[in-house]
Every structure is written in C-alpha cells, then in structure tokens.
Image 1 (cartoon, rainbow, N blue to C red):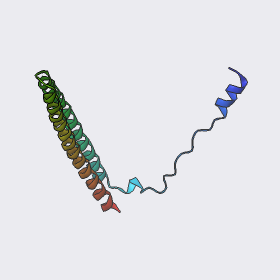
Image 2 (cartoon, rainbow, N blue to C red; image 1 turned 135 degrees about the vertical axis):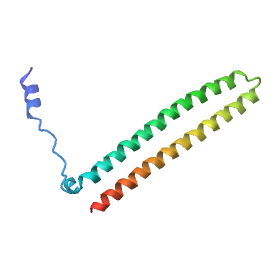
Image 3 (cartoon, rainbow, N blue to C red; image 1 turned 120 degrees about the vertical axis):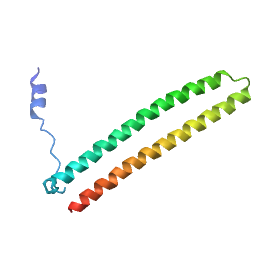
Image 4 (cartoon, rainbow, N blue to C red; image 1 turned 180 degrees about the vertical axis):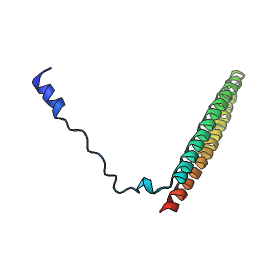
Length: 120
C-alpha cells in the first residue's frame, strides 16, 4: 500500500459522539415502568406485523380475484369499469389498513408518553 493511502487511513479520526446530556437520565425510570413500556412496544409491533401479514394475504387473494374478473371481460367498456372497480377496492383496503395501523402506533405513542411523563 502506498505511503499516502496508509497515512489517509491512519489519520482519520472517528466521528464525534453526539451529546446525550440533554436527554432524561434513563436510570431515573423505574424498572417496572421501563419493562412495562418495553413490553407494550414489543406487543404493539407484533400486532402491526400480524396486521401487515394478514393484509398481504388479503391483497394476494384480492389480486387473484381481480385477475379472474379481467379474464372475463367482453368489451372495452367492461374493461374500464372493471379496472375502476378493482382500483377502488384496492384503494379502500389500503386506506383502511393504513388507518388501523396508524391507530395502533398512535396508541402506543400516547401510552409511552404517559408512562415517561409520570416519571418527570
């Protein structure tokens, strides 16, 4: 390796660590509250994961049904109407699922803030 390359790699300083002094001291949070908060986070993300998996399965079934509908089309007018109907169903299901997941995560956030605010 050339002297210049070796010098470049040796002289690079590691990036400075961020200043964490502005954060609340985590040791002030009581262990049962911290464990409860951690348990809530894990349970909530398990719910979100389960909902996403179920939604993926439902989307696959919906896409297969849409393909069957498209195979039975007889005219250009039927094609447009079928595509609009399929698109509307997909849009409604995505909005509904995103709303449900958003509510789950929002509930987790409010519970986490409540438990942290109790300590303050």
